[in-house]
Image (cartoon, rainbow, N blue to C red; front, side, top):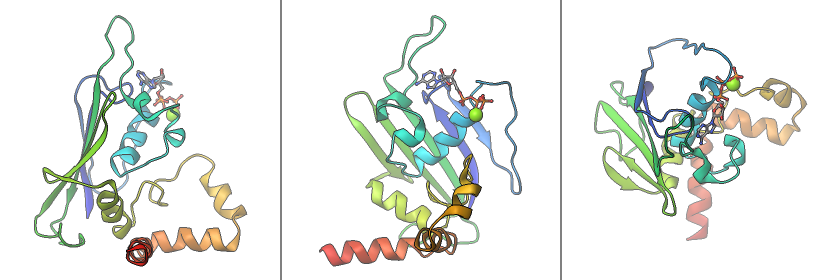
Length: 183
Ligand code: ATP
Ligand code: MG
């Protein structure tokens, strides 16, 4: 699965619907300080199921909704859609039936988040598992945050093992085993 497109609406600085194609290979985001580069990367982590608002530099999950600025009123909801190219059919079941997979997350003030995969409402867990299997989850090494390299070098062996497991695409299997054991 490759990332193909990111669509952001009402999320942090992205008050108007903004679409960014993601070409194969390396993608760079350039722009002046404060223009929203980090916000765009956070939108990607958010739609992949990030549950910690602190790691999104917010003091509550609703803080990701456009808060208003320069005369523009605040929005009441934010929505991010990540389009995945699944032409190689490597997505886990039951999502492997189509060439394109659209994952979206929406948050409305007072109502919390809802997730959809190809238009069907799913649990946060389903989205997290989809990306865990694809080794590209919100916490995966596919997104290298500032200070992360030093963190890996200084990590304890068990923490480093978790990072390697995520990179190997087997983190989702552990999550499923934990779920099965709780049933
Ligand atoms: P730098 O080059 O300094 O790293 P950047 O391009 O990464 O900058 P961001 O950190 O993505 O910039 O954007 C910061 C801006 O986002 C700040 O001006 C902040 O006020 C704004 N911002 C964050 N959350 C919201 C929100 N909910 N509503 C409106 N604006 C927001
Ligand atoms: Mg930044």
